[in-house]
Amino acid sequence: MKATDYIAAFLAENGVTTVYEMTGGMITFLLDSIGSRGDIAVISMHHEQAAAFAAEAGARMSGTPGVALATSGPGATNLLTGIASCFFDSVPAVFITGQVNTFEQRGDSGVRQAGFQETDIVALATPITKSSVRVRAADELPEVLARAFSDALGGRPGPVLVDIPMDVQRQDVTERAARVTLASPVVPDDIAHALNALWSAERPLILAGGGVRAARAADALAIFAERTHVPVVTTLMGVDVLPSAHRLRIGMIGTYGNRWANLALRDADCILALGARFDVRQTGADLEVFRAGKNIIKVDVDQGQLDWRLPADIAILGDIGAFLDEAMAETSAIEWPDRSEWSAALAVYRTDWPDVAELGEVKGINPAELMRLVSESMKSASAVVADVGQNQMWAAQSVHLSPGQRFITSGGMGAMGFALPAAIGVAQAAVGHPVLVVVGDGGMQVNIQELETIVRLGLPVKIVVLNNSCLGMVRQLQDELFDSRYQSTVWGYGAPDFVAVSRAYGIPARRISEPDECADAIAWLAADPLTSVLLEVVIDSATCVRPKVTFGNPVYVMDPPPAGGVS
Image 1 (cartoon, helix red, strand yellow):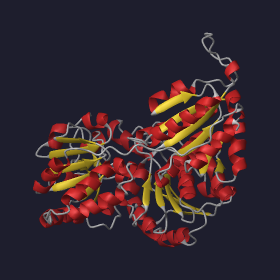
Image 2 (cartoon, rainbow, N blue to C red):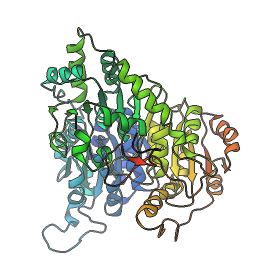
Image 3 (cartoon, rainbow, N blue to C red):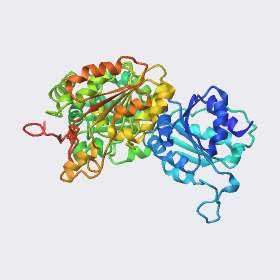
Image 4 (tube, rainbow, N blue to C red):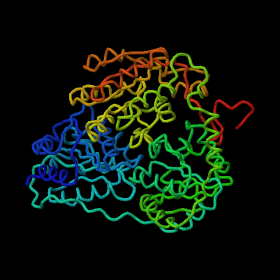
């Protein structure tokens, strides 16, 4: 069969039901082959970055590698931010780019470019992929694609890139497409040592990072935590590993974490870290203060991550899901302490430091309180998709997640403009369920063109735009470090009338600016779960994300400080 027909058949055989793209000359044969099948939806986006984000979010929901396509040159380079997002957040994805004909390529000629839009995307993508390869002949495709899917899903998941010249796409492949067989996950050693340390601790914590979701191990984590009675704190990328009402879920730690969760981290004498990176946003700047009095156990599939920054007392290399399965088998006959005193102490912290009160007196609408109210009204949503900036942190601190509900955001890359296209990927992966988008006015403008995609596909995306008329996260930094000189965040920044823009695309919209308008507006937002609407919420420009770890301090020293000093 023709090479592009083989690629389409291979994708279908390996569980791909949706691909995202923005068309271009070098992928026309490929799009024709995929579109002609009828069993793979081809979703045309308005920017390749948006296609990459949609593929990433779909993969997070389904576990099947997300697939995005782009033409050569600017099409391929526009994918790079989304590729890096998958790489940093451990999301399996396969990016396929078209390339100019092999006879048009510069080779070793020394010229900058031979064919129109010729760009060495393989070289550009290599540092942010698990593998990046250009196909030289069609008979390489079976092995290349099999390895691509295996690389994307195996070990620590991540993105791969396959670049295919136009003339290669028209060659023949004699093999039949087959399903990729993955190697069994690595089962860790030294589990008994870790369990003994956890059992012996008086104040143990599980720190669940994005690696739990990457391993598809959230259900196993819940069972393990319940069996051992160990409370769970999470990183930003692990916010959704337990539903908000779970008795053992404490909250999110970190620079913008829940204060009570950071205090729990301070007081813990043993931390079982599952797929958490221990970067500076999770520990604060002073590592010695952070680890004082703690027995730290790390479980990760990535040896480099185990060795990085904060050496573990017990380091366990292997798949997190396999670790939890083996740990539960070993603990089935063990009587675990009930941890009632420890749990009670943590409950006091949470009562003393409610998230909706951290902002103090807020002029107008309190965004933390709004996040709680909106999320509680959207229990049928498959996911809350947050953009990047203050909106992201208000959401992560205060959304109330129902059982099975996901929290999808851009973590390591921190890419503004993520939420709107990501919501499209979520909606395609969870058909029949609404998706709640939380986005700031700055992030909304990055990929605002995808409103048309939402309308064209009839997707049930509920968009809440928190409009503070500035780029608030950096503006908050300028208050701290630049004597409130607001270059490029307030000065020189602007935003459109989002209600008018939304309506121009055909999406019903309304705007609120006062607290007494919230209840009616939220009811309107959630009224019909299968339609898209946009709610613009005017937030005072001076509103900050609180609490926040202050520069150079341990993770539990947060602004604003409690009366009388550190709690």
